[in-house]
Structure formats: structure tokens, C-alpha cells
Image 1 (cartoon, rainbow, N blue to C red):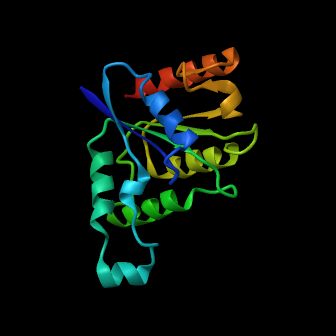
Image 2: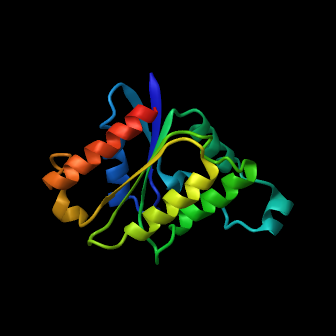
Image 3: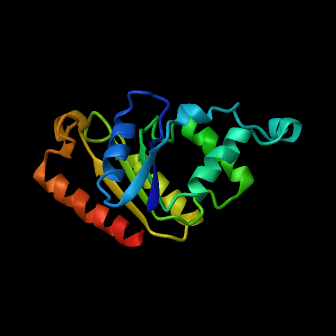
Amino acid sequence: MRNLIAFGASSSRQSINKTLANFAANQVEDVDVTLLDLNDFKMPAYTIELEEESGIPSVAYDFKEKIKNSDGIVISFPEHKESYSPIFKNIFDWVSKIDQNIWTNKPMFLLATSMNNIAGRSILNTATNDFKLINTNTIISFFLPSYYQKFSEEDQKITETKLSKEFKVQLDLFIEAL
């Protein structure tokens, strides 16, 4: 059976992006979904001096191994001042020291959501463009604006018909890439 890795690129344990990543991954049939919590991969802030003194932390290797053993990756991004969250950026920095091909050319479904119509778009575009430079496989993206108005956690569905259809189109492209 295929295995998907999913996570919200946030340190919040109640992250709406973690919920969205889990939802998206679980829409793929006949896969095992492993939902990661980035808090399980905390490392000191990356510096070249720290790497030279102490080496790469073992949890960076653990994260890389999970990616390597997956068949696809689903990530939902919160936006922190139009950038990656600090925890995600630090993991990204450390893992890139193991291997520049961080995502091991796995198909990726990148998402973002926020409490309004704007936040999330910028980081989703950044991630999509950044990852296309280092991943030769398919990278699909979807933005869900106004999470609390357009997603039902209770029913586990996107409530706005147009967005739901758009999500399904993108999901199908991701499934084809798997």
C-alpha cells in the first residue's frame, strides 16, 4: 500500500493547516497516511558553526527518512509575515544539509489556508516556486481562503461548491502523479 506523509508547516498543535493537510491526504484512497507534527522534529536554530561543532541533529535524519519512505507528500502552509513558519524553515535548513533533494522527487500537494481571504496565498506561491527548483516530480497547489467559513471540521469537507470542485481537480492531479 502507498504511504503519504502529511503535515501542517506550523508549530501550533491546533493548526488549521495541519487539519487541512490531514483532510487532503485522507481524500486519497488506498493509502496509509502518516500525519507528522513538526514539534517532534525540533532542532536548534541552524547555523554553519553549530553544524560544524555538533553535526546534523538525528531528528533531521528522522524527518528525511520519513520523506524518503513515502510515496507522496501533502503540506499545508501557514503564512508568517509572507514567509515560512520558523519551525518549518529550520527543519528545511537542517534537512537540506543532508541532501539538497529534500523531497526526494516525490509528488507533492501543497496547500495553504488562513482565517481570511489573503494570508496564505503568498507563502503557497513561494513554496510552489521554491520546491519546483529542487523537485522534478509533480507539484500541485490549492489555496483555501477563510478557513472557518469555507471548511467544516465536523463534516470534514470544503463547504463552498466552487472551492470544493477546484480542490477535487487538484487532488485528482496529485493522485495521478502518485
